Length: 288
Picture 1 (cartoon, rainbow, N blue to C red):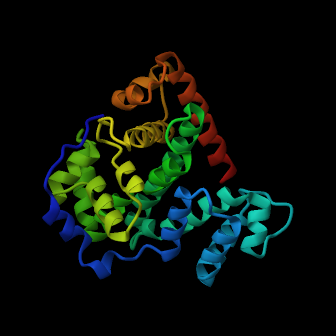
Picture 2 (cartoon, rainbow, N blue to C red; picture 1 turned 135 degrees about the vertical axis):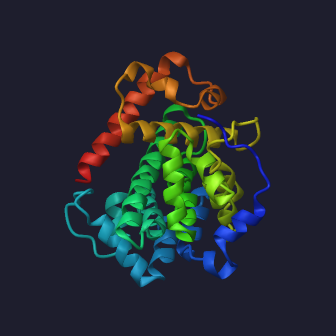
């Protein structure tokens, strides 16, 4: 996987994002929930208080909690009950998903299909990154999940700015260009630059903003492990989407810099990939 080069694309990014009023659309509760990811003192009551402030948002969270995926023993009718049955971290992840999902809703059938694919990939990347962080005990698992969930949001912002232009991006990708390079060619900037700029505008924590750059090789800074975990999670999610005709060589399709950064034993990579792919497949089966 080729890393995206550093460029000064400020003008292009500003053109894509538009005015401050146009991009300040992330639900306020999502900011609060992301802050809770970083705080060890956050409690279930803190989470409940943030969610119930917005009745529409609260209803969406409850609908998701009551979905067939979770198979609860009874229908939950309050956020407090949802936390009791599912746990604080699970409800927090549901709330983050609900808060981000609207970005992936397209205006046309073509847009919707494209963005649904990105949404599925975002969920898989989040789950894979979190699973990896837990397994190797490097990087914050909750931060890895958050970065995985948000990592492709820049693509939806590019698409919202000019959907037809993204069709040109896809054409270049079909002819071998990596996504970031195709986006750079068409828009003058790529999805990582866009989501990082939006994240800064939204006031997301620096850990999350830096962790979103899953294509740049880690250079030993404070966020190196987080970026590496997200990079490998994204690679495994890609394998989950496209499948593998040669599982023994799946590890070769993961970014080498990230494996080195996390000091993952080469002999362990195949097992990690296989177990994570099985986890993603099981989750997908439960969703259908």
